[in-house]
Length: 319
Image 1: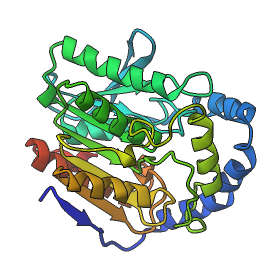
Image 2: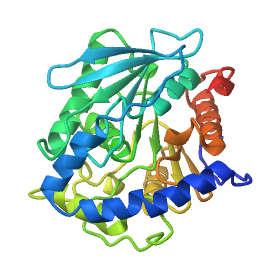
Image 3: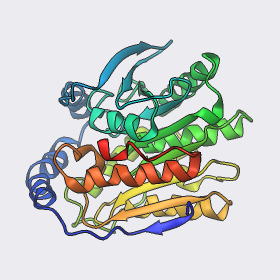
């Protein structure tokens, strides 16, 4: 069933316990300390974009250039349908990370979606504005259609800020009367950039400091109307959008806005699979190399795609 709330039951692995403990005592305090000035954001963005994750031998990565940005094609698994594609928007708060940092997600999505993944290296802050990130996403989609991909053969996915970009791109396409992709997956989407204090999970979140998320939202929305649905998709009208899957962790500071998107989309007649994973950190599927629950999440994504777009789940176990 596409339209459902899912709360997976599982014994919490020792790997998840250990990693969340490490995050709580290292990454979260570091974020609280560093993300206080635009110059620090610039420095962190340069360092964060250099990270690389090791890849299995069967994964192929090929660079791709667009008019204003780049990206990479990621192919993994057997029997990929080259007439279909998944367009992926990486997370990183709109200032950090890259397609390379998110390969643990993108190669597994290639397996479960049984198609190549195009991971977009869209322009980010502090040098670029939200509108430029959105323009890159729209341009990449237009390029795919110009190459002969049919909208019904395109999927969107993204995490965190990339989840925001996924939702904003869908809304912008719909508002322009353009054809929409077949379905979309949002992992821990950052969907509310209004100046709200995040009290839920403020202390429980092992990775994101709530005050720094609010500070970043203020930084990126300076001079904008934060209640514009393309700035805060949680306030959007989702009428006519394709089926959505939203995956969050129960202790995330962004959990509430992920669920608010699900409720708002359902009220507009959009089928939404909302999954809340107990005690999982922000964008936990990126930890699939080491965390069993993260690998299991890809099987759930495969099940969603099988129902939303008729994609066989035979290869999900390989992810």
